[in-house]
Amino acid sequence: MMEMHEPDEAFEAGIDLTPLIDVVFMLLIFFIMATTFSKPVLDLVLPAAQSAEPQSGGKREMVIGINSEGQVFHEGTMILLTNLPELFERHPELPLNVQVDEGAPFKAFMEVLDQAKIKGRGQIAIATRPREQP
Image 1 (tube, rainbow, N blue to C red):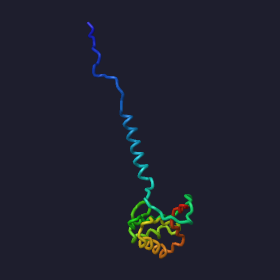
Image 2: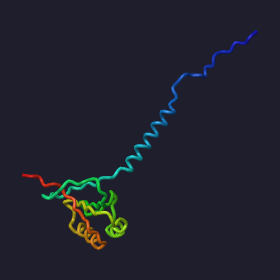
Image 3: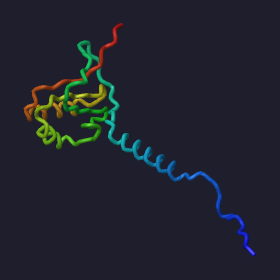
């Protein structure tokens, strides 16, 4: 007599989630990497000036920011004033753009300009915002 085999009960039809989890993981890595490469923005309130002009985004420049506490930043990273000469020496060809919060201590601003002058930086721009018309 022939033996009859019962259907395998261990086999179940279903959806394999492994590729979906792989795609979600890759997207997560992509977005984490994309946010770390984005340029951080320093929150500054620029002083108003009647002679303010729109900034052209096409030219390369070294941007130094000074916040309201007098802390100095370059590319979103706080730097010590003692490290400014080395920073200016690394990129002597780039014009300097100083962005100073309107509440920043004048001493910090003058120390940045003094170091720039000592290192021979001739092209210095001071960022401002347009003054509102009454």
